[in-house]
Length: 487
Ligand code: NAP
Image (cartoon, rainbow, N blue to C red; front, side, top):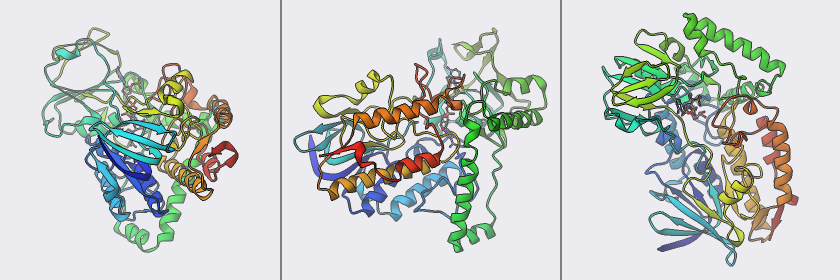
């Protein structure tokens, strides 16, 4: 075991959250190290490279406030451009020398005697830091369903998050299982080259037009040369999404109105009645993520694309057998089946005061939870970005990440200014936070009658924030000192 030097802040993950935390902590003069299991920065934008992969939040808003980019080529940038942006952020903020690539964190153990965290990596290296920030994201463990007979399939299989670019789809017969955010981006792209495309839908999604378009040279030039305009444009996008928050409250007049508009949109876009019926959800708008696409519904109407909703019974060699007895023979199966989203610290054993385990504490509590989605009592100086109950359905996660990282930095600096070694949220503060959270979550669409990756097996919403982002911003604007023990 090699123990390297002691850092002020150790960050796990070099995606949006980790880079943001590293940039602001370095600017504040803290000694920072970032441990990243992949060989490059980017997190989800490095992992997901399937054809059509892009952001469904407008790029001028899906970017860091201190690293605006006038050069986005379109309203919703594709994955390679977002990855390039994050690499640029790392370069511009001189973060790369602080990043240790290929380091997968196995455990983080709080040492009471030194009031610091001992972080062990799978390769055996060990790091010591006063503060640890986990920025590993919610969506990085691909979920592949257990389908009877799937091991007998002789053809190619892949998950959207583990794309095999060497496989040639041209002229092939392909099955895509799942029709979530990844699938609706992938299907239109695959349909351009495959011979037949069979899509398997378990439940439909509320889908709205993305209205993507490239920026004109004059627009890019204006945004570059008039930075105020770029900020104004960004704020316009923010408020446009933010004012849609009431649409995510069950049975609100706004939700009812928007449901009608969205249903009419799908009805107008899909010409055949039977297909239309299969593509319109019966659950409340927003219960699952609302999807944005300009080409998915049109693609589903192509002659060589079909939609199967009978449910998959089994796989028998190269055939997918559905519950109605139909069989389709395919060359390749793509699992667009999402992620294991309920383990907020995958592969990481976090051990706090008196040897307590964060996973066990969460199990006892009925699921992951944290004060502001960031801090837990018993785990001093340990924080999370994009932790429990911080995902959104209506606005940019990057906004939330910035709220979290700035709040964490404020707390660290406050502790340091007061000459304190540890900052630990109180049980009472967590309990009060959770009471409000649960009261508010019950009013949201996430709690509605659908299955989604927002809920755990007990039906508790553990991924999503319960209110507007303005409210989250207000809660994280300053540190409530009374909610903490600084020792
Ligand atoms: P997802 O939204 O969880 O979708 C998974 C799909 O697979 C669903 O349609 C699900 O059906 C289906 N499925 C799961 N298990 C199945 C089974 N056993 N049999 C048949 N179908 C099955 O996953 P995702 O599309 O990868 O997206 C996950 C999240 O990543 C999104 O919600 C979003 O937050 C993020 N994302 C964002 C972007 C972006 O543009 N920013 C792009 C991609 C992903 P059910 O709906 O019935 O469960």
